[in-house]
Length: 122
Length: 144
Ligand SMILES: Nc1ncnc2c1ncn2[C@@H]1O[C@H](COP(=O)(O)OP(=O)(O)OP(=O)(O)O)[C@@H](O)[C@H]1O
Ligand SMILES: [Mg+2]
Image 1 (cartoon, each protein chain N blue to C red):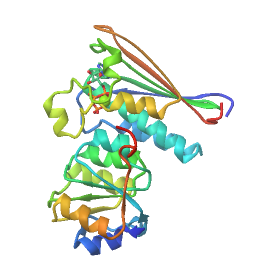
Image 2: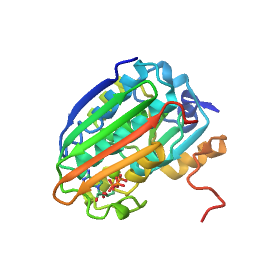
Image 3: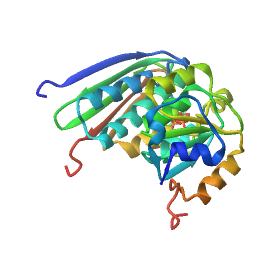
């Protein structure tokens, strides 16, 4: 379990705006640029890691009750996405690291993956 | 809640700024009625996927939310091209979405299977050239 604000410090990321929701904790994360897959696999109260910047990223994360969003590869969400994130009060971090490095650091820090497929099934 | 609550909203075609507004609005409504979070979340996923399909494939349409004592019903109607092979469309990975949709992060062919996964009953009435009507039901008491 990590607070979004602790993740901000660990990654050397920057919050897009201040909100009390930065003190919420997450245990699970999902990294994807495919919102179709996020909608199918994300757990509630998990963290979304993505490099896409359109407004539908905010829609997807809030629809799924996700706790926060990290934009990687130094991508900045589009203006309308920023406005919606503020309105719906979902914390957003901006991170210069690659998706791979971001995931590696968070995995190392103990965050878990949202299960995609049962290990047994094939 | 004896009278069922009914909400109806128009959805515009290919408007990717507005897409998802209906789902956000319906979800807020369900939350304000005090429905359990897992029900609100499932309904939100169903509405959002169905709304995106109307935006992307259906040429615009209407979304309807009905809340009764024991269930939430979501109806998505459009007069678009319809679905030629519904069995194929229900398969994970089948999508006819063009590349610009993929660039937005959609069009992986996950929507209809995800709607099925998150609803207790799903009916799809569709015919080529006539449009598509989707009705999904989520029961509040899953033991039914
Ligand atoms: N309302 C609709 N009108 C016409 N065709 C539709 C409609 N909804 C779905 N389809 C057809 O069914 C296919 C599968 O839909 P589905 O929602 O599963 O995937 P998708 O929308 O292509 O991608 P994703 O949902 O992952 O973004 C679509 O690609 C499209 O061909
Ligand atoms: Mg879809």
